[in-house]
Image (cartoon, rainbow, N blue to C red):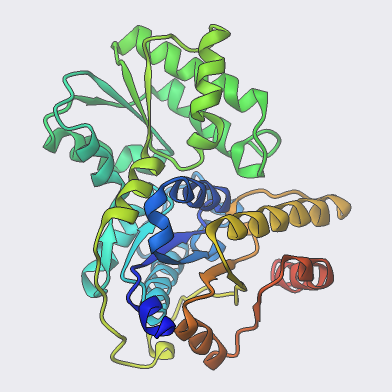
Length: 360
């Protein structure tokens, strides 16, 4: 009877990996909402969805290899989540919505769109809203379109300020993508917001990149205001929280795969078997993923290397221990499943060595 009850629980899917820290941030926000206790979850940090370091900040056509690789990898990732029977899912990356929206019409799983949910949360707003994010997000106009549909005036940063945002996110020495939050990155972002307020008169800012809330948290923004780094009147909108709230509220639905999972592997699929943990809570997932981050940074530092982008992270997957069917499905794919954080001490060095051998 207990298993039957568990199967009735809504199963939330979280796709991360375009910024593994952002996936942790989303899980943290979901865990802060009491309704999440009524749900199962599958969180897949698939770093192979990201651009390789040398591909970042370049213009690619849909027919170029980096885009073909990302398309096939995103499509297979969605099929993988469908295979694991998630009822609905969200994407812990704003800019990736443009790619995933092209694929999702063929995937019978309810998708909770972070960009649309953020715009809906601002219904009735009469103020000017600044959208901050990576170049591809700003150029796509995804937020501008969603906000305009709600009757909200949206603006984007100047060229100079957009360059500062990219520097705060991607700089190899102090950017947020290095898995650390630095004063340099915080200062750049505060300078951008202050300058845009002065030039364009915005009073609200959407953090339209899931790396940005890592540096501009609610508590850090209060500190920046107290220090005079941010104006008191600015309202910072965290899109990740809008997604978290929607994920625990939505009643989704999915259909089983009609073909074996392997048949969905495209020619340009970039796949690495994730490190999988069966966990009792989102909190446990967060603790394990943070430990993996620490091991990764230490491993690379010992070899005079660093985390130079999301692609460098080890793919990980976490699922609720009550989801017994997931355990069986992963076993059918010959994927090892762990359930104790302490096992990391024994396996992580070999896991990282195997993963980075592909980079040589």
